[in-house]
Amino acid sequence: MLLALGAALQLTRVVVRGSEAPAQVKKVSSVDVLIRGGLVVDGSGQTPFTADVAIDDGRIAQVGRLGEVAAETIIDARGLVVAPGFIDVHTHADRVARTPDAQNFTRMGVTTIVAGNCGSSAVDVGEALREIERTRVGLNVATLVGHNSVRAAVMGRARRAPSDGELQRMRAIVAQAMRDGAVGFSTGLEYVPGTYAETPEIVSLAAEACSSGGLYATHMRNEGTEVERAVAEAIEVGRKASCRVEISHLKIDSPSRWGRSTQVLQAIRDAQRDGVDVRADQYAYGASSSSLGIRFPSWSLEGGPKTIEGRLADEETWGRIEREIRATLTERGFEDLSFAIVASHKADPSLNGRSIAEIAEQRHGSQGLDHQLEVARALMRAGGAQMVYHVMSEEDVRRIMRDPSVAVASDASVLELGDGVPHPRGYGNTARVLARYVRETGTLPLEEAVRKMSSLPASHFGFRDRGLIEAGALADLVLFDPERVDAPSTFEEPHAYATGIPHVLVNGVFVIRDGEPTGEKPGRVLKGGGETVTR
Ligand SMILES: [Zn+2]
Image 1 (cartoon, rainbow, N blue to C red):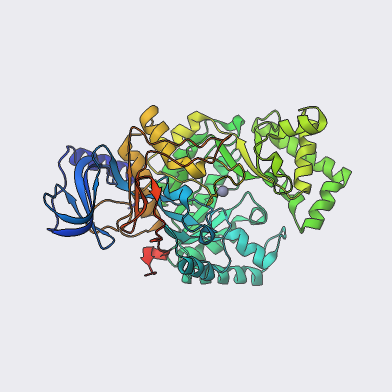
Image 2: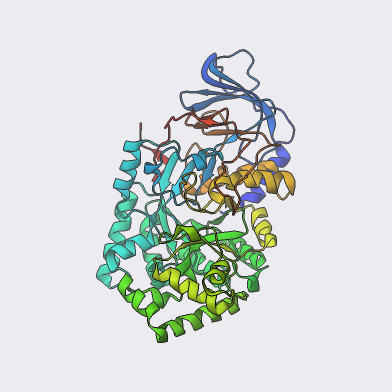
């Protein structure tokens, strides 16, 4: 039976009330690390308690009031929260092997990331994971296998259903990726070419992944005007392919549909009651980050670069594209494109950080929609752009956050200080939850926020022995100051690490100590089913 996790936790809270530490499990006399006197928020959602945490040989040896224990390293954690390392199940950190310390993640307390989201991953998952194992990285890494990447490898950017043979080849790639260690299958149904797929294709490929223990994670077909239909599709895939479902970066991205989070969350609860194990994740900001192409009709992006350029260059075809973009803007409740900011435009990085409206003003002397659309067209012809879109309402963000089935995840890549103008979530997502939504606005209790960043995602993705502070668990831990933790990264000045997080351990090894990176690379590749295979 599928019980709503929140209900289970309510019960736990009533039973475990009080500040007594759990019973000691086994006696320890000498350990690697002893964390003394912190406020343990153990990831389960239960009331925090003051305790010592002993770590030995990469695992938590004991939790409780431990008295005299010899330890190589002793951390005085009085005034700090001790929590399970944060698990970020929605990232685009596919290139982590190239920036193996991944400081934007570890400095905000993230100790496990999942790559391969939104339909985009390596096609050869085995080789991608071997590269991470060879390089060694600072945090644990798992990956999904992405539909768009698999479809592009077999069908290019064709806008049609696959032939039987093509579908078989895609299924074979997904099956191989699962054998190589993927933890599931992801879609990016708003992107080319994934958007050209109909539901039966998704069901077929998701079934391949879920029959070998994976889950189905989806960037849905629509997050605004058709969001309810898109949620229904995700649930249908879960039911027909027997998948656990993760709805990625849940949001309402169109002003004309603001408030619909109520119906969307209800649909998720209804599906859970009907036996579909569907959860979601969310980042803690009112702006999204995506491609510029997402605003263009998908038919206009079919085929190779030359074909697309031909459409954009041809005045008559452009007229048709422009009319469709205008109609979509109106339906979504936007007056123009002033909500759209360039994050990264490779052909002219001087535009990074500027809005489409500002660029129109600069180039055409006017911010009118006609000129904004000309700017969008020119950017697409010059290779497209990564964008930040200010499209959500705070009310929806908070309503989604308060739902017990929704985890916290960044949707970020591994970042390099100073490179581009990325969305600030890549530096601050977890810290912002703790600062803004726990401390400043009281949207979430501390223990619930921590649960959403630890045991909730760990259980849904099957990461065994992670996500809780308890004897025997792997020692992924974050220590933060609940009064000072903060996310100084902003949309204007994103390149700022999270603060108030002095210590982070991965598999029992410090990757952040006294607020500074140690250079250690204790991360492991987590393969399907939670198996740890390296070392
Ligand atoms: Zn996405």
